[in-house]
Length: 179
Image (cartoon, rainbow, N blue to C red; front, side, top):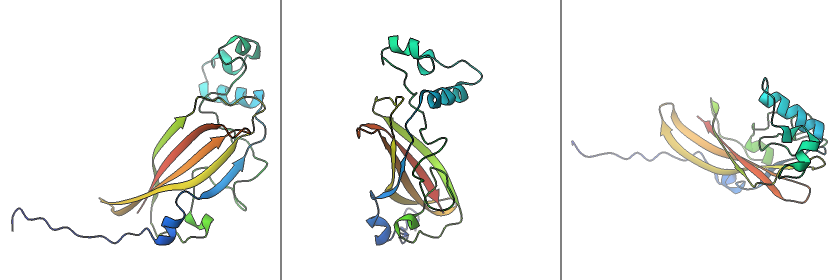
């Protein structure tokens, strides 16, 4: 039967319960007000051993820059040190770790959990001293495919950051593979 292909239908491991939580808020984190010192610490760490751009640490210089004040770089993490509202009760977990169980849904069984891709979109609105940032996490997509390791479940976890005015700052999609 050369030339004929056999299509094998693989049963989905994404349950109706799992589909029902797509797009629902999984977790919310609220920052302390961002300080100039938080921004300075971040840029010193990120640019080390180089000197960071002046608009991120020199307030007088930043007032003359296009932004008109000190601003955080796009990759700034307002949750890097502490939050007044913990992300989860009990032990702290990585900002990218997740489980459907956070929404009362049984996660699928798996033997490996791999972060495979990160994509970030920015609004162009910068974080500034005094801003209080809210991070919302949700599962936004599931898809499956067969791979060398067998059946794989791809799950996109989206973190959306907004400021105290509810202005969208950025969204980060982290794609995980479970098999």
